[in-house]
Amino acid sequence: MGRFDGKTVMVTGAGTGFGAELAVKAAEEGAATVVVHYRSSKAGAEETAKRVEALGASATLIQGDISLWDDIKRMASEAGDVDVLVNNVGDMASDQNGWDDLTEEIIDHCLAVDIKGTMLMVHEFGKAMKARGRGAIVNIGSTVIVRGSPRAPIYAAGKYGLLGITKSYAKALAPEVRVNTFAPGFMATEAVLTRPDFQAGRGEQITRDTPMGRIPPPEDVTAAALFLATDDAMHITGSYMICDGGYSMLGA
Image (cartoon, rainbow, N blue to C red):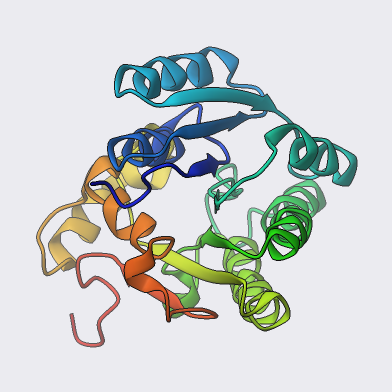
C-alpha cells in the first residue's frame, strides 16, 4: 500500500530537478495518475512521464506559464480531479549573484512566479478541491524564510510571501483542503551547482556548516515533502516544515 494509492497528484515544474523527482516519488507511492507540468522543458517532462509510467502510474503532461492566470485556469480545467497539488515552480533569482546585482526585471519575474503564480495556483486548484470535498496542497518554499538571502533578497521576499499564502488559504479552504509549505535547504541540482557563488566556494561552506555533512540530491528529500500531502499529516495545515540537514539551526 502506497501513501497515494488511487490518487491523482500534480507537480508543477516536473520537467527538471526537484519537480521531476517529486513526480517520480508520487508514482512510487502508488499514485494512479501523476500530472506532469512544465513551461518550456517539454523534453524533460516527457522523460519524467516515462519514469512515472515505468512505475505503473498514468502520466498526463500539461504545459503552462505559472505567471499567467489564464494559463492556470486552463490547467485546472485540463488536470481534472486533482487530489494533491505540489507547487514546486519557483524563481530562485539565479541571475542575481549578489544583493546589489538587482534589476527591475528580476524583481518582477520573481514576484510574478513565487507570489502571484503560486497564489493563483492555490486559488484555482484549491477552489476545485474544496468543491469536491477533499485535497491537499504543498507549496515548496525554502529555508530563506528562516535565514533570509543576502545573495538575493527578492527571492527571500517571494518565499516569505508564500507563507502568507499558505496560512491564508489553509484557513479559507478548511476543513476540506489542507495547505502547507515544505522548506528544503540546498539540494544538489544543476541549477544550484552551476551558480557562480556555489562554484566560488559557497558549496564547500554550506557542506561544512550543515550538521548532516552534505548537500543531498533532490531524490533524498522528496519523501519528506510529500509527507505533508498524505493522510499521515491529516491534522497539519497552515504550517511549514524545514528539511535542511540542520543548516538553519542557531549555532549550527
